[in-house]
Amino acid sequence: MPEKINLAEKLSGFEDQWSPKIITRYNHNDIMVVKTEGEFVWHHHDDTDDFFLVLKGRMTIETEDGDVTLEPGELYVVPKGVKHRPVAHEETHLLLIEPSGTPNTGDAATAAQKDSI
Image 1: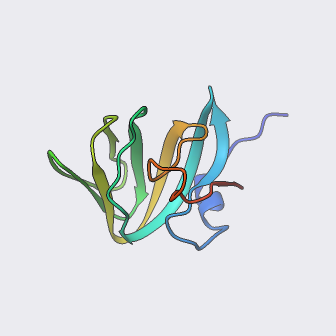
Image 2 (image 1 turned 60 degrees about the horizontal axis):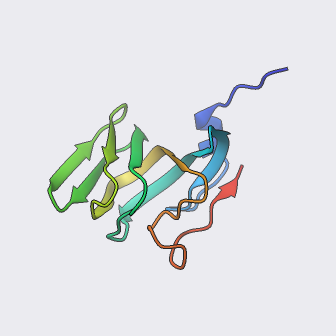
């Protein structure tokens, strides 16, 4: 029997910040939820775009080309190669989509480990 995924339920199952949780996979992409607050590190992805959809809270994606502020229900895709830094102005819940194995900092040595939940 097919199972649906409840995003609020998945997000209620953990408290850690900036640690993406894989909730399913789609065409070799990880579909993840993450809780964030404060500033992440400046980084870029050489080979992939970076997808952010705000579910709750408010976030600014700072880029070399200008900033984009996102409210619940809004999304932004950072083009590959663009240096950026997510900043969550309050606890913010996100849905992220990226190719499986993509490090969240653009560098495997400094990336947070992604756990499946």
